[in-house]
Image (cartoon, rainbow over all chains, first blue to last red; front, top):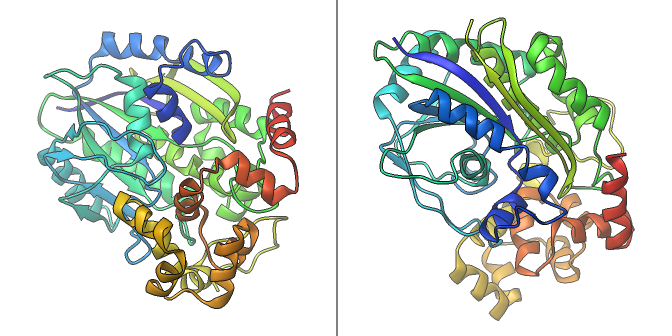
Length: 280
Length: 115
C-alpha cells in the first residue's frame, strides 16, 4: 500500500527562482533563507519518496479568470513549466503519475469533493520553486509529481475548514492506493505577505510563528477561521496558508518535526519552511 | 458581491464584482506571458489597450502606471505583476508606489518586520 512518509511546507516566492538561477546561495540577503534547505534535502535523501503531491496555487500561467476551479488535480504523464511574463527562467518538465492521480480524483469525488481534472497542466513558480529548492538536481530517476492546484486568486476562496477536510480525504485516498509507494506532500506558499494596495508590505511575524507551531501540534486551531480573518492576519496573499492546511490534514494526528526555518523578508514575504515526518 | 464583511485597510478583495470589472485589463496582462505579446505592447500600447477593450479609466491607469488605480479598476495583482514586469518594476517598486514610500523606505519596512 502507498504510505505518506511526510510533508514539507515552503514559501514559493518568484524571486527565489531568480536567486536559484543566479546561484545566490551565499549572498548575505539570501543565505539565511537557503541555509534552511539542506537538512530537509538530507531527510528526503534518507526517506527517498517516489511521488510528491504538490499543493500549490497558480498565479496566472495555467488558469485565467475565464475558468477558475477551486480545486484542480493534474492527471498527466508530465507537467511543463512556461514563461510567466516577468523573467524567471523556464525549467524542464516534471514527470507525473497519472494512475495515482486518477485514484486520488476518484476517491475525492467519492468523498463529495468536486475536482477539476487536468490532462494538460502548466505548472508555475508556485510548483516549480519548491521543487527546485527540494530537488535541485534531477536525474533519470527523478521524483514523480502530482500537482494539486487551489484557487487563491479570486474570491470566494475555499475556507480553512474545507481545506482541512479535503486534505484529510487526500491522505485517506493516497493510503488506500494498492501500490507500495512512498508519498511526500508539499504545501507551498505563504506565510504572511501582501503585494497589493496601501497595505502592501504587510508581514505578521507573530501570526507566522504561531502557524509554524500550530501546523504541527494543532492544525484544527484554524478550522473556524474565515478567509476574511485569514487575510486580516496574514495579508491578502497570505491566504495561501490554506495550502499548508491541506498538506497537514493529509498526515496522521501525531507528526514529528524534522526541521524548520523562518526568515523575514524574502521579497515581500515572511518565508517559512517546515518538514514533518509522518511515521506514527 | 461576494464580500460583505468589515473592510480591511488598504485591501481590495478580488471577488466576482472586481473580476468582472477587470476582466479585459487582466486578460491583457495574462497575454504578457508570451514574449511576442510583450513586444507588441511595447511597440504600440494604445493599439493593445483597444484590442483588449479597456475602459478609459483602465487605459489612463495603464498610461500613468498607477498601481492603486489599476487595482481600483479591477486589476488583480498576480496579472498586474506581468504588466509591471514589462516596465521593469519589482514588487518592491510597486509596493513603494502604493504605500507612498521610497523604495528604500519600503525595503526598510520589510526588514523591520523581522525584528
